[in-house]
Length: 624
Image 1: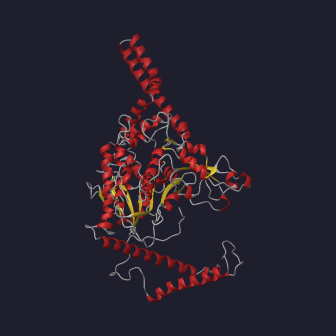
Image 2: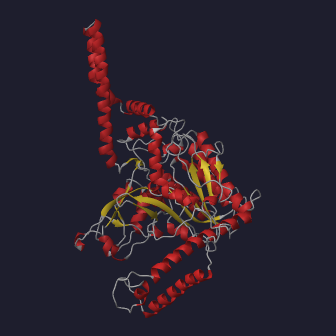
């Protein structure tokens, strides 16, 4: 396949696959493009996932994997992204990265204050001064109006008094001016928060174009056009890239790409995976959208494609002007990325609609109600569970963004060399030298609430040895949208080194024993999986064989004749009933034979080696 200058592109082995998952972190996403380009030299991507800015990187990687089978798309263009982030947008002192975030006119003061607060190091005094100076520069008329009574008192004192009266009058005027200024600013900020922010879908920036938004493309336009270019499509001309395009691929001889992201359904209080599963019967699980609302958040090209692909059936037409959300394969990728990337208050939430089936209402009164979708990082910022298999056939890599490790303060990219080395727990150190930081304490509470499940998943053997860690220091990544070009370049280079480290360890060598590393990883997964499977089967045997005196056994429930109660979820037919009884008896008998032979996948003595620690568990959880 020819590159942009006619040279042959390096192609990985067509049979060497990998999956990858990327963490959220707003501006931290500049680390991902070069990391994925490095991995693409050694692997073909099959499953790609991420949250928030990790969802952007995941979508770009999926589009580039799709596009490298064409003459125009692919990873060559992805290598140009970090440099573009750091280039001037055309407005003084503003990079392309910052220019994509365009506040609405009525919420612009909050955005200017937000940028100053980010630079304040989050000390109490720093945040106060940043808020005051930001308010003065953003709302000069409000500041002058609030300070005017005090200024008049000072002026009258200077013109009509002297001595102690003059001093008292000036002091009183200054105090009155400060109080008036503070009251006016608080009133204006309160109005923006409680009136304009809600009217802007609970965000300072919608992600779309705004009047007076300055030069450079807005976030969603840039997102859609970049996806087109990476996928080898014509930006602005072809229909938007859909999940079906990724699944099918342009080349029938090469497997398609599976892309998944996380979002948070704030109304229902739960994480959800994107794209949504297609709705079931009678409209259950169906989501709707309002085209006019979507046009405030997305370019017309995305919304027009969604309108054209909306299922046209009687149930869907019943709720006009709402339209059913397109089926997963027809859904634009850019729509789901934006649904995952809705950083609270900075970026507007996305409204969709669905029917509340928990309410007992007549069918004619069942109407879709609004659900607000916000950043996926709230509930799963590092979804390392994506694409998990008990016994993986190829690696699922993960890229983690974290503060410096205390043993590696100057190391910017690292990963454990084995499942016994580093990575057992992620410490959140917010105090030192006997002093505590209140802001650090509050930030730690937020981080635990947000990341505890992802952090625990990353501790499991067979997970932590495939996670590469990129160090982020203060003022790097995160909400630091106004990073200087050098910082953007440095972070991008760390991403490149992270991708190269993963590829070297599991695909190319020579520092690592490549075959040994992958076989070791698979062996650890096997040992861990068989241990938890054995534990689950023993629990199943106990429940199946033993019942309380006043209860039917599970064996009796499974073997009961068709038509006998309980009648919920019955066997489909007699053949299924007989198969189920036979299979479960064989399974339980197998576990009992293990006990009789005194064999186990756990350790049998203090001298023997047990399964990898910490032990995971198998349990029934909802599908996200």
